[in-house]
Length: 240
Image (cartoon, rainbow, N blue to C red):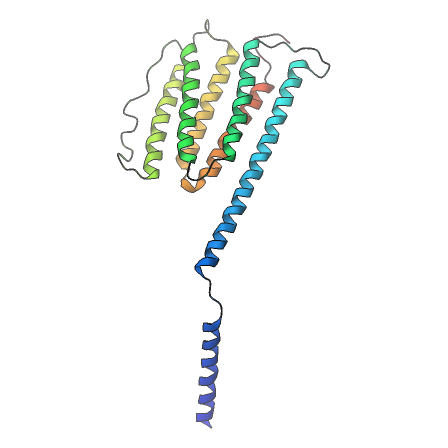
């Protein structure tokens, strides 16, 4: 009797093992399809977020037109320079949103370096216009980072160090402004641009390669926040 029970147990166990072996196992093809599905879902989310920002940009443009004329059609007093700067930033945001649609994990870092350098160059020019004195950024800013390492983290660390040195030079210069050469509103806006640049660099410093979308999207969104705040401020240099 015991032998019969043992034989039954052995047969049952063998059947279970055979069933497990015959069960379909995940294949490389299945894993590849799952990765593709995830990537497609991520890309759709990114396109949806870009579309939302494009809609907000259109709303900012309409809002600026209304602010210029007022709801009653009466022209609001603003300087030509003020209006030109706002229009230029609105156009630049449109261009940034166009770039956002074609940003990928492969091209985002090169674009980020270019865009950060361009932003720093532009705001630095305005800082030099207003500051009584200008001290060039430290040339040893990258000392203490990861040297000649070519990994992405090392490149990021060197870039962040270089940008922070430039930002520090701009912040120091803005502590002593020539009031005869600057209007309060322009200086306030320049300070806001420097502050935004620092926030963007700090965010980049905390990021890794997988954060590429959040870094690029958030930078454009923060830019729109700053521009909206500027548009909502009454121009301090004119009446109205």
